[in-house]
Amino acid sequence: MRRSRQWIVVLALVLVVSVLAGSQLLVASDHDDGEMDLKGRALNITDLYAFRERDQNSAAADSDLVFIMNVNPRSLARQQYYFSTNASYDLHVTRVANNDATPTGQTDVLLRFGFAAPSRDGSQRIKVTAIRDGVTSEADVPAVRTTTIGTAPIINRVAVGGGMLQLFAGLREDPFFFDVEQYFRVRAGAARMGPAVGFRMPGVDFTAGYNVLSIAVRVPRAWLQSRSAATTFDVWATVSVGGKQIERLGRPAINEGLILTNDYLNALNSVGPDFEAAALAGRQPAAGIAGPIVAEAKKTLMAVGNDDARANALLGAFLPDVMRFDTTGASGYANALNSKGSPIRGRKITDDVIDVTLTVVTNGGIKADNVSYAGPNAGGTGHKPLLESFPYLAEPN
Image (cartoon, rainbow, N blue to C red):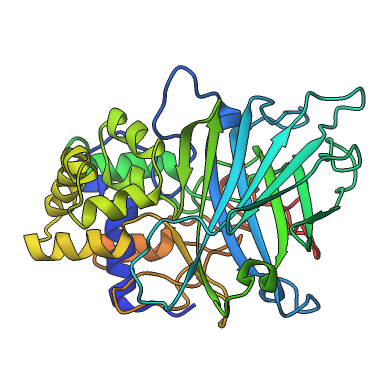
């Protein structure tokens, strides 16, 4: 992984900015943010991944892309969980003219997944809706279904919009890894709210043994391009209930890393990155509504030593919150940057952003949380090996 100092600094400030601010947020992923009475775990996005399939599997087609949306954090082992039958789980894609272009947050392609009530065997039928350049197509047949626990992954072939997609949905092991408990202690010490401590050796992986519900879709790049020649895309995921959006995620930890007020997190979860684009451009009414939220994000950035100009630059680099995905180079969260210092190569399943951020936040004093995907972590834990083929995510615990 190429670790440009500019990117490390930016990522560090965004992901773990609350270390010095002393917030009570779980950062570096999106396992819990913007809590509300009506948002159950099945509606909570934990992580979003986007990568070229050949970078995960050298035998895969050159032009196939994989998108993964995980929800339902802390799903227990050996228990079946279900996608909400009231929700729409959506993947949004914008075609991008060049890697330095400011994200617009406009949806050129939408993939929507809806789930029926569980059948007798525990599987759920999946309705797939594709909206590409304003044209809608649907696939809703009994053969398109989720994979139940304890069975081999069902890879559904779904014909929509003149293209053939492949889809998996079901329970998988949570691939995220981080010693979040010790992070709280390190954070408290840095904020002078407790004794100064470092990370344990080895670290405790807080997701060890847990599962998530995953939606993984293989998409031909040409299908996303349609009539364009785009090779870079902005990607984000949302969850809506009754037409009301209640969850959104692009890059991990952007919103929850910068915003401390739960009501503000809920507000950001309810709008798209187009709203952020309008606010940053000063367009009304978005600018007026977003003013307090942007002010809080800027205050958080300045609390860790950024001056006004640097804080504004960071906001410009990481908002609007989308995951930029340049498909012409090897996928990886920090494999390449644009001129603003934003990552542009999507995110692979085992990418470790925590070690990068800790190195910079502590000026090299701590180089790792001492947790890795494979382990062994404290107690001998480690994540299961990824599958060799789609959907790649490890089998559930």
